[in-house]
Amino acid sequence: MNLYLIIFTSDSEQFDQDRTYRIHQELFQALEKHFTLHLIPYTEVEDIPGSAYKMAFICSGGVEAKVIRNFSLLPYPITLLTDGLNNSLAAALEIAAWIQTKDMRVHIIHGEIGDMVKSVLSHHQAFAAKRAMKHNRIGVVGTPAPWLVASHVDYLLASQRWGVSYIDIPTEDVYKYFNKITDDEIGMDASIFANRASSCQDATPDDLLKAMRFYKALKMVYQEEQLDAITLSCFSIFNEIKTTGCLALSLLNDEGIPAGCEGDLQSIMSMLMVKKLTGECCFMGNPTFIDSRQNEILLSHCTIATRMTKEFIIRNHYESGASIGLQGIMEKGPITLFKCGGECLDEYYISGGVLIDNSSLENACRTQFRLKLDKPVSYFLQNPIGNHHILIPGNYVATIQEFMQQNRCKLKE
Image: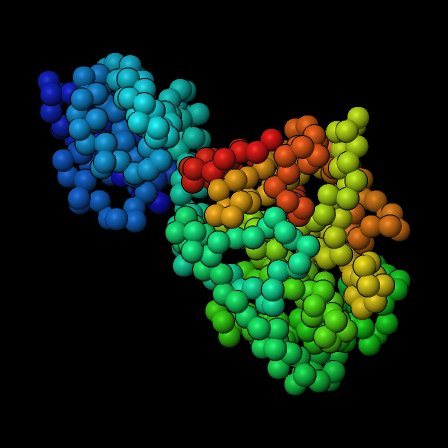
């Protein structure tokens, strides 16, 4: 990994690479355990590759006016790195205060050397995830479910902010492949999947075969359209071909492909963000019940990546009472709950928490997780970003928070 530091020194201390390195050696050597370090004077910024990872390094005091005159050279949102030597922290504070008067974001990385390196690594992780999302294609099979009245996304604004494209795909493109696939072609895959389940309670062998055919058809469309993520209008599809997308979405997520339900444009973007940022699978669910006294919620849906579970049960789909749904059982432990929303995907919710139970209520979707959250659950009742939220096993709050703040998103609580 390359890190280009844009060097600002005082007029009395003209840039000398060797001398600068010696003075700030402790920080630079710590950074070099993770990055190939490039020290570039601000007068030579044009020599830095356009897509490179870079930030301003304040070497000393007395550079305030110099930085202000050249702040357009700094990557936005502006981050100032300083170890405090030679009055550099004082200069960074003055610079940051001026930047804030212009209604721009600025962040100072300073502190113990180890903490500074961790902050730079977190900053780089967010930078790399945003770069990895550029030119990604999100397939939207069918149209979003009609009840998702607050989950619209403006395709143009999303493209401008995040560099992604939403690709509308007619359901007929999937049916074309679905109708050509024979049971013989997918019989072995269906049998293997059934044998992996801890039990099969409600579904029939024919249900499983049709669901596996749909998975194969959806995978073909995914490959044909060269997609990076996919969401589908699963209820309208069920009405047409009498099979659910629950198994298909589970297997796609197992393969590391973000795949979501109900044509939810905001949730599939949230899932794509999680994948690029953490590499983890995640679970898209409905907040089903809220216990304000215990600060708990029940999150449920009828599909989950099987690799997120310690075991899973093949069930029927809750709302329709037919076809295939999955009941996943996850290990108890720390989780992160996340959602990116808003018409141009510039708002977000984030909370850590603990998965405390796998529930089996009859009047909710098949996979059910009872979560105790770190933040007040009153958010869901007073200021929610829509219905669906994304569960990630493990604590990724700081990682996601850094990413969303770098991309100028507003936290909702």
